Length: 227
Image (cartoon, rainbow, N blue to C red; front, top):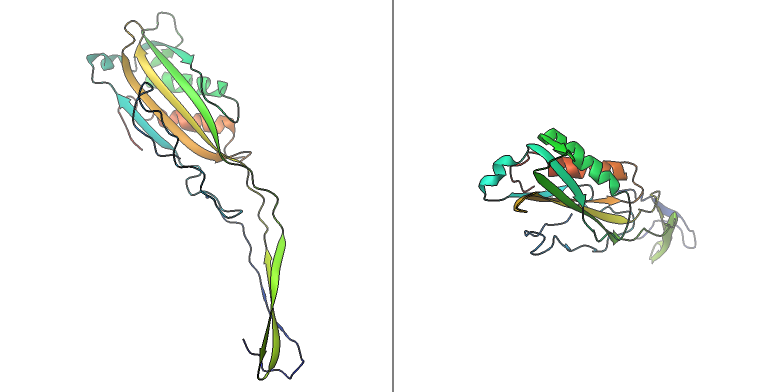
């Protein structure tokens, strides 16, 4: 860019401000626990610092109902709850899921862990680190450009101010549950739900993750869904 100034006279061409403070689950693969596992989805694509994954905070749910006359018993009577071994690689608080599941089962019409359970529900909770925490950002950066023309010279100054805080680790939390007949072990219902959240996000503490995932898992129970 040329500037109409006298030779050897330097002017400040401009000051550009850029404030970076903008917001970067997984597609479920059908199949029971004996078949293909749920995931892993194509996680891990790079994002610029401070950019949030657009899938963050979005719940994905799939539930399935068996083609059996025994499904008429779903939502009735005592039911036992048991936890399976998950493949957790981050975060804790899986005990919160059992309490959340028991609450949802009560809403569905069951008596969780009551004597004489005619059905059982087993569940697995897993956590996977999708992206590590971001390193500290440089708050100010920029550059200087100098132009010379037949009418003189000029200088342009660009400053970029990043006011965003480094994002915490991005973690995918997944719960898989299945309900079976206690006597015959026939599988009657199964479902899975997942969400991606940031570590230390005050809106997504472990209690909130457990509550949201289990509520989504048992919404419209026992009707099959795919959301």
